[in-house]
Structure formats: structure tokens, C-alpha cells
Image (tube, rainbow, N blue to C red; front, side, top):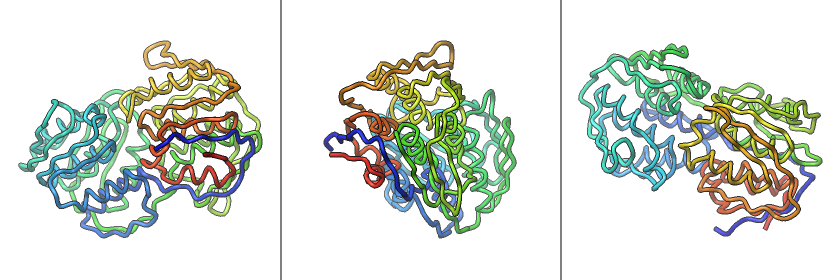
Length: 405
């Protein structure tokens, strides 16, 4: 697809219906399958990753192409392994570079037969059956992707003896683990958790109807737009004040950067408010997907930053640290690791000419930098990447006043 030009649009406003949560939808699909469904999932996400998960769960074939969807690859690996299904899981060239060894090692320890088909520790792989439970507990580093932990948690009730998952060291993305636990409970699982261990008891899931809430990762881009626009008031419909998603942290972050939120009548009204900081300090351990929203806002708004909890960005759809450094550099901003795990952001300035944003096959690069169009003309490379999580993003931008070609 050709690049998309966004014209400088300083004034925006309107009401939109944001997409449903991809994270909740993907978990609900796995839990529904484990329960024997159908449960009745209302407001399922239209994101490509979710549609792919749904299609692969229904696919009777042997080869499962997860494309670039890390969640799909990890959740289906655990699901097919523990349910004893013979499947080959593969994906894009980038997917074949994303490690899965810790998850496969834990599944093998439990009793799954899994073979790597190319490079040890990476997809593609083949699930060949389940020999019966060999271990009641596995240990994982706490700072590993929460998707590994969630994948093991969700299949654990299907094991004859349940499963203990011990987490060593600092635990990252804890809200995603809590989200998984809450959804498992909704489908009838019994479990307990603290930051050192997750204990899941054996027992059947039961089908349970569920309505998927709005996606706070997607909502974050509207906060960025309001933060940067000269005038803005945007109503997000179907958004409640409470959420099981960790990315709801964007409300507090953007309050510091000049965006107020008013929840009323099932909607969230975003409006301009006084910024309260010129130097943002934030630990993204529990909400790493917000980094590509927050850092571009700070960089162009003249806000310095000190950030931690960004380690997982190195192994996402792209090396998101390198991608951020490259694109922030186009306005003269610098993102540097000043000590182990600590990143400093030096802001740039709004340039006079058009800026061309590269997206690196990464949906969050496109949507995280699009709000810059409130301050200048932009060209977004490969705009179709948003289909991974928010297919209607460009349509919604038009709806609030952005001009594009």
C-alpha cells in the first residue's frame, strides 16, 4: 500500500467507537475453546490478530500460520501441546526470530512433545502430543513476556494435577497476568497468585458469556492526539472508568502531559488541560505497549523523559527501541540508554517541512507517530500495518477532522 499523507490538523473533535480489546479477545477465544464453548463472546475485536486466532482455532489442518502475531503463536503453542494435537506452527520471517524457547521448555517439562523444525528455541515448531503430566511446577524468569506465563496459566486447569508457575526476579507486565487470571475465573477456573508464584488448580472450564471491553492500548492514541492538538475534545464511546487492562495507566500519564478525562454515561471525554510536568519519569514494566504512544508525545512537546521497563521492546514486531530512536531522531530528539535499563529522552522540535515516518512492519509505530500530524504534515509508510490491532484507525482519524491523502 502506498504511503499515507496526513495534513497538519491543529483542531480536532468528535465522537468515535474505539475497538474492542485485542488482549481480552485473544484470551477469551482460548478459554472458550478449552471450555468446549460456545460461550457467546460479544464485541470480539476486529483486529487481524484476533481474527487470525479465531480462524486457526477452527482450522482442522495441520499447519498453523500465525503470521506476525506473537500472542497467537504463544497461546496456540500451549493450547495445541496440552490438548495433544499434532500441529505445525509457523509465521513470518520476523516471527521466526522471536524466541519461544522458555515456553517450549516449560511445556516439555510438563509433558508435551514439541520439536523445533528449523532453529532451536524459535518457530517454526511442531506439537506432537502429550504424554501425561510429568511436572506439577515450572519456573520462569519474572521478566519474560507475560504471554508465556498467560499461555501456561490458561492451559493449566486441563492438566490432571494443575500447575504451579514460579516467577523468579522482577515480574514484568503484571497487569496482563492479572487480566488472564480474571478471565480464567470468569470461565470457572480456580487459581491464586502473587508476584512470586501462580498456582492453578485442576478442573474443567465452563462456557460463560462475555462482553469484551474497549482496548486501552488503542485508546492511548486518542490521548496523544488531544495532548498535541491546539484545540481538541474527543468522546470515546463505550469506555468505562475501570478496566482489567494495564494500559489504562495512560489516563494518569497523559494527565501529566495535558489531557483530562471525564467518565460519564459509559463514555470517556478527553479534553485539553494544563500539563503538570516538563520531565516525565515512568516505569513501563506493566504497560510496555504505551511506550510508542508516550515517547513521541514527549519528544515533540518539549518534555524530557527518564524511562525504565522497556526491555521487552527489543523483541516485539520489530526492535522497537531502535525504531523509536530512528523516528524520534527525525525531529532532533534522542533516546539513549544511560545505564542498564534506564533510558533518557531529550526532546526535539517541530520541523517546518513534512516528516516521513517509517513503520517497520509495526502497527504501534504507525499509530504512535500519527498524532504528530496535529503539529505538522506527515507521511506514514505502509499504513496498512494498523490492521494488526486497529483496522479502523485511519477512518476514525478522518472522523475527528484529520485530512489525509
